[in-house]
Image (cartoon, rainbow, N blue to C red; front, side, top):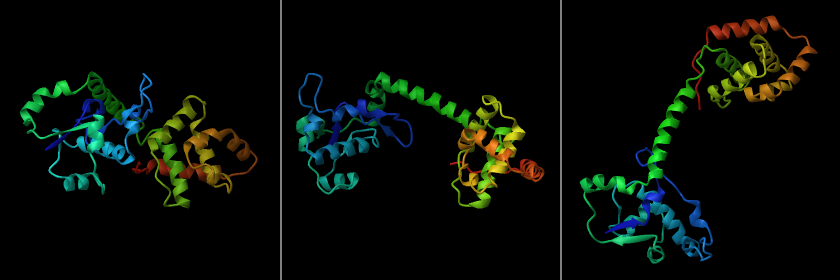
Length: 251
């Protein structure tokens, strides 16, 4: 026997991606249909609602219908203790097929009919987004001013807290880019402010990202102007780091 989920194509999402994704349509939890009639899913027992969602997840693992050798096998795959498929059958969400499923050749031939145009469009969109994401990840090279300044701030923080969670330096670099390009901040001045704030007892624990650095930059400059810092030593530390910069882990 096999379990067939009605209107499976509505839940199918990025079928060729690993791990496979599904769409959990929010409309299934609406209490009423557009005509005011009670929604069948809303009227299901809570256990049946959970079972259906788990079945949709399980269905994504199979090119064919969900195998259903016996209740014990299905309960183990779904991770539930009690199994009652009858409410889902009565409501028309699933059906039990006792016939043999089509072989792989038939499934491949019929596959375009199982995919809605929306799903095909989403697959193309995903490919484009993946390429864009790859380009964005590599936008700032390790030798760029934006990346080096970001890494400089990170290493100052790590010197005090070695287990500080490693940030995405590409995102940090984007904030530095905005400081340079939009805020018209001078690169050397950014370096000096980073070095100063990471030595200040108050600001060292408040500037823990380049986004916060950008937001508080004017305040930092004003506070910095009122104190005497060893800018020569800070500049030397920065220049040495830039020449010996290594790879920083991204998360």
